[in-house]
Amino acid sequence: VNRAFDQEGGTVISLVASTLTRTLDARITPLPSHVRAVLIGGGPVPPDLVARCPIALPTYGMTETCSGVTLVAPGASDADRATAGRPMAGVALAIRDAEGRALPPGVPGTIAVKGPMVIRGYLDPEAPAKAIRDGWLDTGDFGILDAQGRLTVLTRRTDLIISGGENVYPAEIEAALRAHPGVRDAAVVAIPHPRWGQAPLAFVVAADGLETEVLQAFLAERLAKYKLPAAYRCLDALPLLSNGKVDRRSLSTLAKSELEAHPLV
Image 1 (cartoon, rainbow, N blue to C red):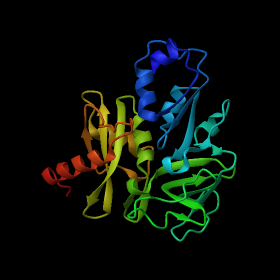
Image 2 (tube, rainbow, N blue to C red):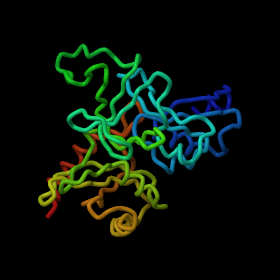
Image 3 (cartoon, helix red, strand yellow):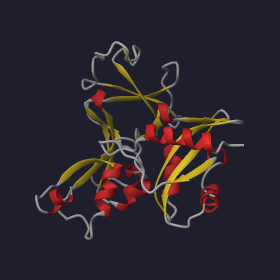
Image 4 (cartoon, rainbow, N blue to C red):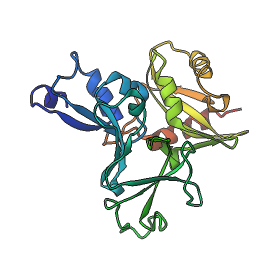
């Protein structure tokens, strides 16, 4: 990627967050001035990464929508860049509850998308039959639309943690963890909890000697109590999929084996 920027004149690129992080980590100079935009997608975008790269523009999309459906425009304000942007031309976007009813601005729910770029259906007969209704695609992602029509992506439905009846979004905890100067990367998954049903477990890539008690105290100043991780595990690096995204399935499997060895009490 850096060779494309430095030697081949690349001006615009679309990356997942972990790839942009590694791209920036590998540089000893800022991105060249001819690079106009770095689009980031593939999941919730860490706020610290957006701040680190002034030309980073968060997006939202998926395979079923032929890639992007929202985009932060070049030259946007910091408030805009803290979101996944507004719908592109021809895209209808809504936030819906479990019964498929549209929710008002500021209320979290499932992201639904409609437009000419949405697939007609799945070839796999075992795919969710109700994923597309009346042309609206139920993306399976949770998000919020604000009064200005900007989308904030919270998490995949399968990644949502329900602890004591409260919704806990891993991306929020991960962003808070990355704000600590001793944390290089973080990922949060759900684990069974004997009292609350589920609880967050945080995997962190951190500086040597950083104690979990310090991280818990750091998070306690930034997050509600029910969002605090029930346990921490340190890794040398987070496992990644071939597309550069964090391999959360591997982390969930690792969390299960860790809990079998050291159960919560």
